[in-house]
Length: 397
Image (cartoon, rainbow, N blue to C red; front, side, top):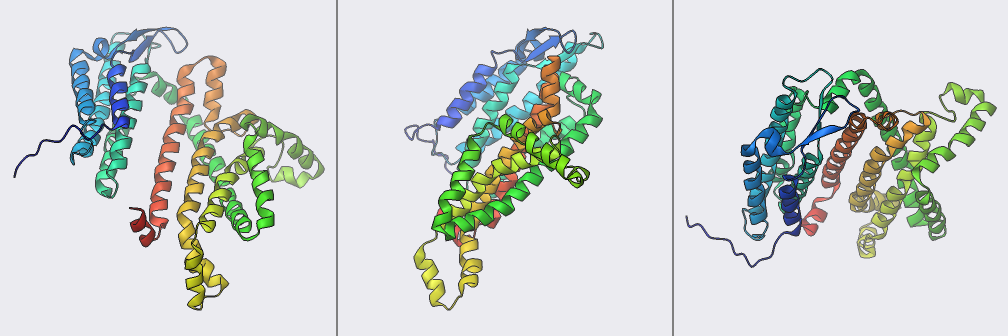
């Protein structure tokens, strides 16, 4: 078997180049902050000073390898190697963080904390860039895509479950608030899930109605577009007055939990925000269908209901699911604001952290929201893939 050298004149992968440059730059930034307590200013440590010069050299070599591979875009091994290298960097970063945090706390007082610095977050962003471009360019090779997307993250999750990061300040914050964290996490999922489920039912219906009736199209999109222009915090606040009025006028609404503050106004506001992407994608999904396909179905003797079930729904499904995916990711993020009107959710930690000037508590609310958004996006992409007709997937590949 002959080994062929790749050609260098095929162009570079700009996303991988940017990710590699970010990764190299992250090695010069502060990776750890050692603080006397959760509120005090701390002392910064680089990866070399906290984890050792060996760790620095290993990461530098791996990032340089990624940068080099970025210039061999057409080589068939480029993206598998980029994905493998990025995941290796991710796993090694987790190992270096665990060992460095334990070393920095050795002999320190019980209130001393080790927080992650900008270098770690920049490294994670750089890994995401490289993994993203590797995943995208391995399209059609599902198992390789899954390995590139999940292998490093799964190892970190196992390390997290095994207590490898318990010395970090954010994990200490979690240990002190773990019961409240579980409650707010469930509440966050319920608020986001309920609003998106309701928006999916209403939005698909409105999208079909807009596609069927030209007169209603402009009114439906006028309303859904305007609601998107209202700032999220203002929309949550606008729900308070009318719901308070209704709950006082109709006491049974209070018994149902509908009042000016709490879950009800939050779900209504999130529902309104989730409508536009679902309505728009449903409308476009139906409008994109070639009239010749509909004529062919009618020529085969299908009635209106059969055309809708057998032709319009399968062909429009990918775009409709894309709309629900966008609304889901958006709702996961926006639900954080719901804590301001007493609805709870992970935003509670963010606003408590801001009030106490405690960055670790802010991270305790922020990081799970980011992970949830990534997971929801991945699951919805799988749903789009499974929901697309085979013929449509072949034509797009």
